[in-house]
Image 1 (cartoon, rainbow over the protein chains, first blue to last red):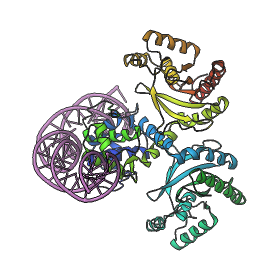
Image 2: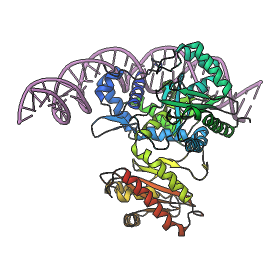
Image 3: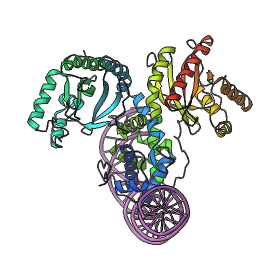
Image 4: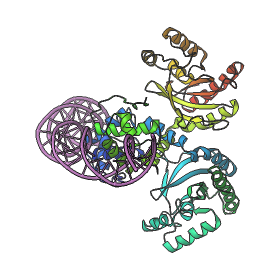
Length: 260
Length: 260
DNA sequence: GTTTTCGTTCCAGTTGACGGAACGAACCGG
DNA sequence: CCGGTTCGTTCCGTCAACTGGAACGAAAAC
């Protein structure tokens, strides 16, 4: 009962060795502190090939070898990630806005966008305490059962919605919306209200509120959300908090040049 | 007069194709919005090889192709960087401390560590305004002429110092310390004071103050600094601000388990 | 309009990656 | 304390696949 395989995005790039190496790198992103044998098992590769890839990757510091002789992501990925983040206006402008939003609502806040049909966190503010639930934080989630995903799908191109439905609205909790027609109704409601709510649809006990962020061309390039336990983000707080999320999203949109 | 070449960390990893691809990725980190021909020129490779590497890299979303047909870093590097940062206690604990330090001193603050003889920013707080001087921010700097580097070298293993001197104390400004004996004296003074000052030794008009951060085993694993224009970080403010930097560094050290 | 430079594709030669097997070291359970 | 297993690492022959030309249309520069 092994965790099995990493992520073949679209096999056969006709560049085997590079595909293998990038697969190794992504596998180390999914789980840290992995040995060569386990990596080879997950990726269906051979130990020697994985070893050679890791040797090159560690020479460039994309991975580092722990004293356990096991491997983990290296400093280079942090360096490149920081460069990407600082180059992107979106994340730079978003940081103080998210910070304030977290302070006002006493909740975690996120900036995310769609990537390959999933919601990918670009920035996350942990508040009040950086409570560490798990060792490897979840930065990528399904779109159909998260406030962020619903906000983005509702205000994005229709093909994103059809893809999400085609991919199957996987049930995550008893409250996950899994019927296509109910999902379309939900998106219509999100579009009307301007914000989306996730009522324990992804993780039981957790509630989220999200609103889309628009760029100059009025594309929904990202979304802002807050997330908290239902004991804190109670039903009577949904309305006022949603207004704060909307306000934050509007402020960021205007920074990006969104007209009015 | 081309910018010329990227960064061969230690050629001949005996994995040519992977080395080329990683070189391409790092070149895109140094400068964004590069075309295939320019990449090939910088890395002394052939267009077709660079093209193939970019095809695989973009399939995995490590790079993305701009509408200009040029290439840039992709979302995947941000995702991996965020994973690395959230896994590392150091950066998680440091963020609120840096934030407070920036607020108290009205200056930018940094968390950095040594990587391959250079200072590499792990975290940076831009304060008060995220003033954008240049498009691609400098996250990697020489150790010998920065407060962070001197703090880390002074409290780290002696071999780091000899390496720095052997690499040549390159002159960056008129105030850069370039003589080995004077540099050793400076490090001794840093060790004695507990903090390091960079008086326009890296960038004219800029002053920095840094103090080391120790882990459980009392290794100087990182350093905290503030940086500002000399018009703001005036000579009479060095003493009080240094105390605040020291306090921040001590707080982070204790969070890491450093005894007393 | 002309010329250069770009990104992309194709192809043959040969380099260098693949995938076994083998080695010593670390780790396990007894 | 000591077999037995599993680990990370190295070596090597084979042949898949990467390299590095040349060639193409398209875009940009002159």
